[in-house]
Amino acid sequence: MAYELTKTNFIRRLLYMDQVFIVIPAYNESDSLKQVLVDLLAINYRHIVIVDDGSSCPVSEIIRDFPVHIVTHSLNLGQGAALRTGTEYALQNGAEIVVHFDADGQHRAAEIADLVQVIAEGYDVALGSRFLHARQHVPKTKKYFILKPAIYVNWLFSGLKLSDAHNGFRALSRHAAGKIIIEQNRMAHGTEIVAEIKKHNLKFKEVPVEIIYHEYGQNFSGGIKVVMDLIKQKFFN
Ligand code: UDP
Ligand code: MG
Image (cartoon, rainbow, N blue to C red; front, side):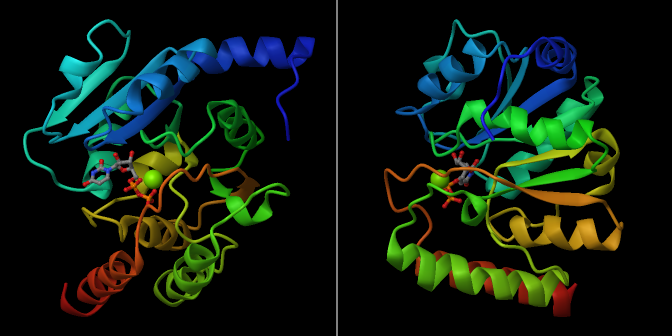
């Protein structure tokens, strides 16, 4: 769904800009972060919250002149923890819609509008799905050894079967962002968020988004770690 700048969309867009907070977890993303911000600022998003998750070269040194909020973890805690920190910050600062967006250039700034639109239609959560996107190319090993099994892991632990289990591109209404508690500091937070959606009976919709692959991302051992974190949480907490 490409964003068309009709008159109605234009007015809606002006309203959104003040209500939408884009939360970006960032750990050692000095190569990609500037371009990600340039793309977001070009669309006029006004509230961009970067959570520097203990990067070795601090984000505040890389992007001195950008009009963004920077929240810092003094230690590297993981993407889940960074999203928890950033979402809380966004809510405290008046966000009506919180968007989770990666710092490594894998998400498309232009597609945020598609997710925000779904929240504006009355859904609590819009979840990005690469497998609903017509033009998406996914590297085969990633698809069959990580992402497809992840759908079933997600289903097992959350009770919801989605078309794409570990997609970090999502939008939450204020209501949903306040209900969803992220306790998993690292990558298992993806499944945890889906479990929270089910637990709180939040109205959700999957939205086609394209994930850009320029590097491999999480590998198979990363996937095993996610399952171990979920088992720990389910049986030992
Ligand atoms: N990230 C983070 N802390 C970490 C690991 C990752 O804040 O300890 C951020 C990272 O900078 C990126 C996002 O979380 O913006 C997703 O990480 P990654 O690209 O490694 O995961 P994948 O694409 O495989 O889901
Ligand atoms: Mg990535």
